[in-house]
Image 1 (spheres, one colour):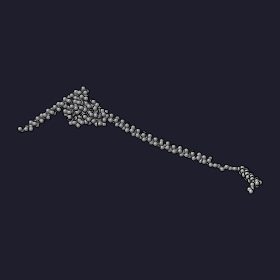
Image 2 (cartoon, one colour):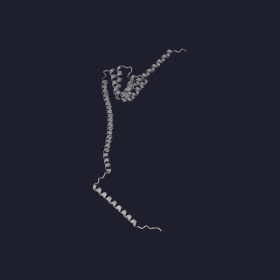
Image 3 (cartoon, rainbow, N blue to C red):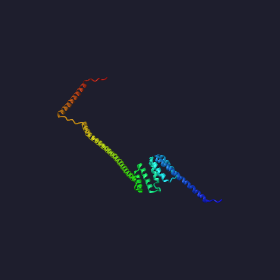
Image 4 (cartoon, one colour):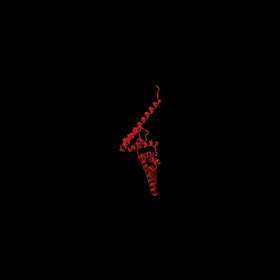
Length: 252
């Protein structure tokens, strides 16, 4: 049996076309449902529908853009910013790209990433210079960025001032300590100096001083000594005489 490859290829193309058509239909249906939920402010439901649309067609710009909006409305600003980042290079017209950068700027602004939001708004205006709302948001982002930078500089200055004050306090403390030590040493030195004359005075007081004597006193002392000596000699003579009168016992 001869195989007709043309019929097989045609059947494959037909099935592929049907699959693509079904995916496109599912994508559009999910987007329409998501839009209705979004209009009713049911942002969580709209997020689910837009994700279903992306399952049907991962390259769907409309589903991704609307998903970013739904995330923004739920205050999921970080996820919204990532979603817009992913589609900012999509092959769409300038008006659509400008809307992507505008929404990206809003998502960054809400995260207080003012520097990044300024760049996003500038990109939106490059693509659509007549966007009044983008101009206004750009001026607000620039004002917030300036305030943020001033606050950061002020905080830095305060930190530097605190560090300087701490250093000055430490230096002053060291100076005071050195001064106290110096004063203490001076006090000790003065005490030693004051004590030295006292010690000298004490030594002078403790050292025996030679006593002076008048000539009259000296003569009286000498006469007394001579009289004592005569008395001693007289008593010696009397003792000898008395000893001579005593009889010595004689042994037979």
